[in-house]
Image (cartoon, rainbow, N blue to C red; front, top):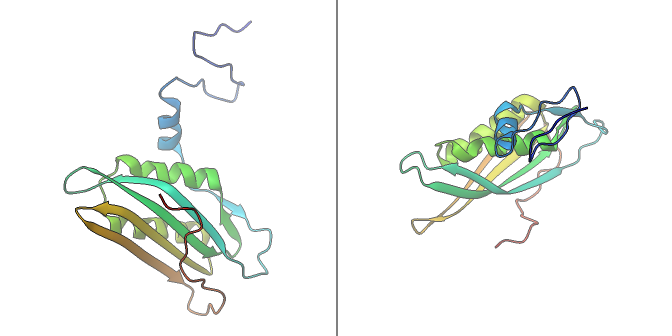
Length: 158
């Protein structure tokens, strides 16, 4: 018989017991970006991802910055596993980093993980101090000649 305290859930023997109010933080802290096999590596196709709830902290003031991160890429042998991407992005919420550094770091980390044929990461930050900032960072293999779609957001903007 298993005895559970109020608010606890039973877990399998392979899972760690979740502490209410902490397990999300612990999962984010322990997470790693993961690659997943591309089911169609013979084809050039574009994967479009929109992450509308990106947050980080201004390195100067410590105030929060908010953005939609858009990732477009043409995979080769691997694609990004989406839950690992979500947790990776959530690691930025308490990190003091500039708009430019955040966008470029996301690109660098995804390129290192996936070795895509082509990738673009866009950080579309909300207005702050009456200034709208959009950062475009791009990677391409030297011999890549495939699709490079024009930047576009598909989710409705607020």
